[in-house]
Amino acid sequence: AALSLTSKPVPTVFPLDALPKVDGADPASNVLDIFKLLITDQVVKFTGAAPAIVFPAVEAPKNSDLADFAIPTPRLRLKGNPAQITKDFVAQFVPNDFITGVVASGPFMNFSINKALLKTLVLSKIATTQEKYGINATGTGKKAIVEFSSPNIAKPFHAGHLRSTIIGNFVRNVLKANGWDTTAINYLGDWGKQYGLLAVGFEKFGSESELLRDPIRHLFDVYVQINRAAEEDATIHDTARTYFKAMEDGDAKALALWQRFRDLSIVKYKETYARLGIEFDLYSGESQVATKDMDEALELLKAKQLLQEDQGAQIVDLKKEKLGVVVVQKKDGTTLYLTRDIGAAKARKDQLGFDSMYYIVGSQQDLHFRQLFTILKKSGHDWADQCKHINFGMVLGMSTRKGTAVFLEDMLNQTQEQMLEVMKKNEAKYAQIPDPEAVADLVGISAIVIQDMSARRIKDYAFAWERMFSFEGDTGPYLQYAHARLCSIERKSGLTQIPPALDEIDFTLLKEPAVASLLCHAVSSTLDTLYVVNQEEPIKKARMLLYWSARVTLGNGLRLIGLRPLERM
Ligand code: ARG
Image (cartoon, helix red, strand yellow):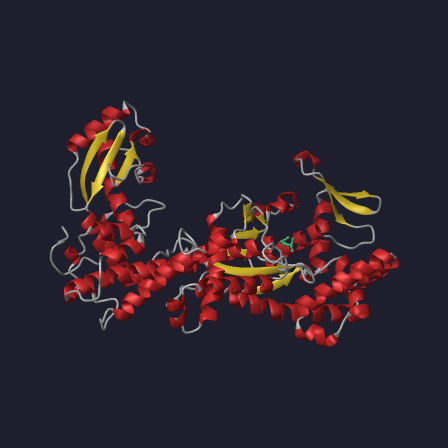
């Protein structure tokens, strides 16, 4: 049925059953897909091309003045001259309420759509789905493990861990928004000979009260001191090795001390991640990989005749794969980083299960993950293909501002301080913020996260304090400010119901070009031209729905990135 645009009631529902079904199209959650499917429908009927070919060919045109959607006819893979086919199609095309026209431009079909209808459908969709706008159910029934952050106990939380934290949280959120069941794992670096050294160090330099007060910092200090001492006295390394061997052999006393370090560190980590709004489902780590799982993994490699002995150590030859020769067991029988990852992957598959597992780790470990996945595959685990390494480039100069940021907490504190300084520059506005410290913390974190998200993932980028704090350009403060401004409009609107009821909206009142540009993200410029306060009630309601929709959409986007949208700043 034709939808009326000029009068109520509003078309909040579209008969989705009437649309062709195509894999990857989701008209129930994505309004644009309704338009794309209606284009697909006519093109399929005329050309006989498969819907699965036509639908993905409907794209946003390079020049949006010429068309709303375009199909490059060669993408339809038809016999004959694309320009001629385009012309013939255009000649017989029948306009409808949604797709208002098509013109031929060489081998391109340039479609125009009913923008008023698009506006109505998008706003109605947002109003009915609210915080759920933008999510879909494509991942329903599937399970993903996302392993990220994974710092090392007693060592600095470096920029790579920060990036892993930001990207990992985002990957998890995106999967969730696509309907996946996710498990977020923090795989701590908490095992290895160096932790034998830490234990020895704690006996020499440790302080119980310092450990309880600030475990992460104290263990780091002890670690630095014992390393210095070991430079003078090499026997310390032997003691450390013996200690670690005792840990590997399950010696209760050695492990008890270790367990305390770990438990106390985790309490502190949780606090700091909470500032970022991040929670892990599981704190795992190298120490948690069961000996049994590693032994089984080695047995399997042996059975497949992949294990070789080399001077008492066990090795796997991956030269054919151009991945070198890797040691999986040292000659004293202790395990390695790689061996623990092999055991951990298998245990996760058995105990948690997954359809996909993502490791969010810097590109310095590309080789490690290639070796890991190759060994899993060669061991006969088909699911090795479900494991993916999401790598990323380095952050350069992150701690140069004061040169002291060693831990995530320092980093966040420094950012908060700097942000507060920036905010204080606008005295009048600063005076109105109820809790400037909390706001500075959230805006500062947004600055870091948006800077990171703006960089290309695999590229290195330089940390730029001034730029990321700026309220101009696509920065964290800019996005948060846009959100807060929209919230303030809601507060000042004088309307009692927000969003206003859809059946009270006259969509024809949303006619200015600024409305369309707002739907394309231009929040601040639209706010400067279309007011809500002091407008007549119908205009007020229509614009309030528009702004409310923009606010919800922006908020949903910010949450997806891992930020908490601010209501005031
Ligand atoms: N703790 C390691 C590091 O700081 C990262 C761990 C990555 N994850 C893994 N499964 N190997 O370099």
